[in-house]
Length: 289
Image (cartoon, rainbow, N blue to C red; front, side, top):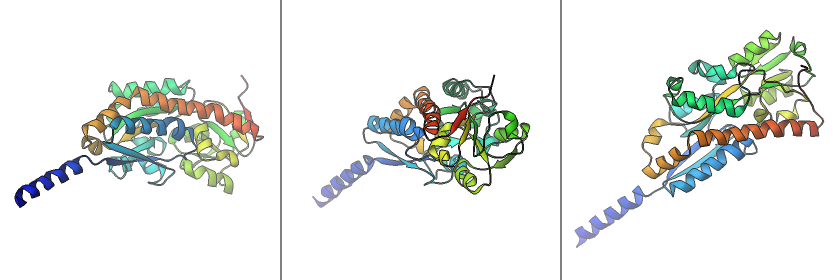
């Protein structure tokens, strides 16, 4: 009888253990107030958690809680985090073919670029650049430009300016225009502007919103002078070991759906950012035709 009771308890324990929810960490460098968080990532995580029916539970860690933005790719590859939002600017040598989406005036809209990049990943054209992780969505920021403490109303105004940038392509654009590039990670922009290390930064409206750059800049140029590429990814080994329901929930919501969701988040920031800047007395201009 004792033996049977022991066996029964062992099976019961094993069943309970196998039914335990797998806890997963999602590293998102932006703040909870950012559109990338509110419109893109949070709704996706909520949907996946619901559809997984308790098999997995994804928790978002915003800001740089799980590491700096420039380390998100390596931390995902090495399993320090399970999911991450990765920008290729700081690690551009790993993604040489994907940088085509960062050329000035190359991509007209965030959606066009994002879906285009996702298709290139899926059809194999740039797939070799993403083999170390499991990509879930692609994202391009089509309208990176200058956000400054002093007026930039024409490209000649950039000459001699110290401008912060987080990628090689951005730096090349600044140098071609006669500016002086200061290599910085995006979360370092605020402090560099505040201290006067740089006069302006080359980035997109989502970063202006997420990192509160509007507090330290007053002049904004709306011109697609380059882009940035990002993607949402998961550690491959962690994915492979997930319960089937967890993998299915992720797979159903990855790809075009997640890419479209993230694109809406960037579009919202591109619309919201200039409006708020003007309301707070900042100048937002486009180059004369």
